Length: 274
Image 1 (tube, rainbow, N blue to C red):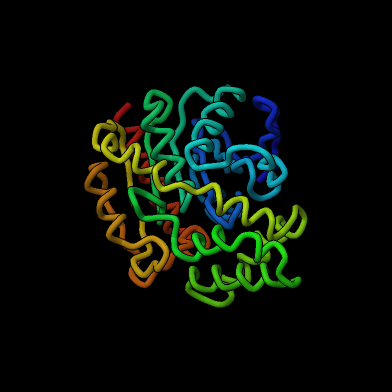
Image 2: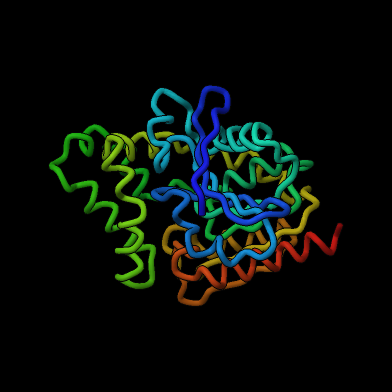
C-alpha cells in the first residue's frame, strides 16, 4: 500500500491506499493504525482500498493534540476527508473504534455510503472496556510511570486480543512504534480520555433505519467486544453474522483472508443492488 496525506480543515490526514475502482474505506481502532489492514487490503478484489488513519492515532498522533478525537468527531473527520479527496460514495469497513465511526458516519450521511462491514466493533453500550477506562482514570499516573510501562500495557492488550503470541508480537511491531515516536503514554492517555459511550448510544435507535447492505464478522471469544453485541448489530442492520469460533478481538490481523472474503461478499451484495 502507498502512504498518502491531505490537509483537510487544518488537519493533516493520512491514509494507505492500493488498487483502483469504487472505493472501500477501512477504519482501525485503538491501539492500532492503518497497518491493522496490512494483510487484508491486498485481498480485496477490483476496488480502490483506502485504510484511513484517525487523527490522533498512528503516525497522526500529533494531529490529536488540542483537538476533539472522540469517536463522534472521527466520523465527521472521515466525511470531511472523503469530500476533500473527491470520494462521493464508498463502502465502509470498521474494527473496534472504527466500527463505531462507521455506524455514526452511515447514520449521519447514508447517501455517502453503499454498505458496511463491522468486525468486533464498538456499539451501543459495549465500551469503553474496563482496561481502557482504567487508562483514562489513571492517566496522570501512567504518563509518569517508568519507561517501558506503556510497552507492557500494549503487550497485554495485544496478547489478550490475539489468538497466538506470534500475532500479538507482530501487532506490537506494527503499532507500538507510533506511540514511541509521538509521546508514548501521553498519546495513549489522550486517546483513552476521548472515549464516550454516548457517541454510539446516540445513533443506536437509527441503525435499523439504514437501508444498505451490511455484514457482521465477529471473533466469538473476544473478551473486549462480546459476541452478543455482534448479534445485536446483525439483527438491527438485517445483516448476516459470521462467527469466528475461538476468534478474539483483532480479527483483521488474526484472520485476514476471512475478513477479506467477507468484504468481497459485501461488495458483491452492493453490486447486485445497483
